[in-house]
Amino acid sequence: PTLIWNLLQNNLVSVIDYEGIYDFCADVDLGHSQVSAAVAHGNEPVKGEDGWFELMVKVSGDDHEFKEDETGYVDLKNLNAYSIIEPDQKLGMLHSPKKGIPGMTVMGEPIPAEPGDEFVLLGGEGVELRYDDRVAFATKEGRALFEKNTISVVDQLVVQGDLDLKVGNIDFNGFVEVTGDVPDDFCIKATKGIKIGGLVGASHIESDGSIEVTSMAGKEIGTILCRGDLRAGFLNQVTVESYGDVYVNNEIRNSVIKSTGQIIVENGAIIGGHCLAMEGIEVKTAGTSSGQKTRLTAGVYFPDSDRFEYLRNELKSVNRQIDALNEGLTPLKKYIERHPSCGDTSNKRLDILNEKMAHLVEEKEHFAAEITASTPQQFSSQNPKINVQYKLMEGVLIVLGNSVEEIKYLRSGPISIIENSENGGLRFLDISHLKVKAQEIE
Image (cartoon, rainbow, N blue to C red; front, side, top):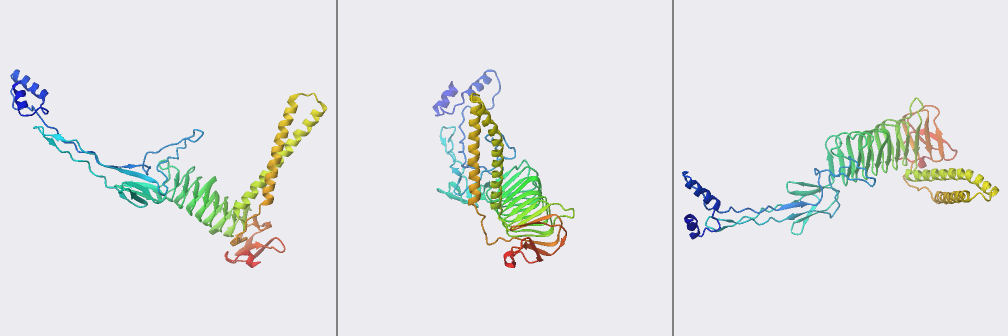
């Protein structure tokens, strides 16, 4: 008690260590030697929490997020590893540091605490800092990066090496480059272009810009949708729709290639499949010595031709259904006429078939009307012309304008092929550049 009273007399009320005093007294009572003991102590001040930057979007390297579709299916290749950034999108905001907790000396005097450190936020490419530089906004589309206190938005995504399950499918507002291979069953979409340094399997490649691939083996299910120019070394069993030119260095084999520009195979052949180009085709060799069917069409705008083909196929399908339905309606009507008391079942079935027939007739009229009202678009760049530098093989089917002709024997190049618009058929002429249009020659 005397010790405590002495401490209290020295204004050490709030810092007395009663537990320490009791332990000290107990040791003395037990005859233990005492050198020193803490009977009062102060409190160290606690520094405040540092300021920090709160990200409101996902950046590359974040945890993957798998999402179910409407059927509950989860595609493990759709990792959603980063957010797709749009212009003026809020990326994150800066939080101020917090105040510290003051300490106290052994005499009960307060010790000031330091506040936390300010977070120094830097705005990089594609980012604007607003509201006293505390809120980051995107100034362009792309993906967000946050490195070394710097928030940026870039429009380029580079995958070093092969595309795999660690990366997954790509859907990116910008340019995508894969330095390695793209195996089967992946999907790459990019708004500003795609470049693939390795081999591409049976995958889907799509871009609003140009696309460059070393080679692609599509296994009849691989597809490319390109709204710019397409460049490739080799295409095998691939379906391509290009709204620009298609340049292939070596060979196109068993593929369907459609272009609103030119199709040019610089050093090799077109073997099998169908190549259609609005502004002409140029190839070293067309077809094979085995006579494999190879179709070449020039001067046609494929979006129109595809739509007309769809309408004609739908009209044929509806007509077949109408014919099949009539085969069932006619005997049913005769049966009801012969058996007026056959009951509600037969009459109900007749009503159902008549309703189905009315629906089919309405569909038929709709498709027929669209076919009648639609006319193919005309473009000044259309060029129904095919250039063959070396050999035009037997079995190649040439479609130019209203002329469709299968080559019956080998023809040696270099030749230009155009339609004979006066007498029908085709004209095989000395080769001229694709810039020289068939209409000018005619």
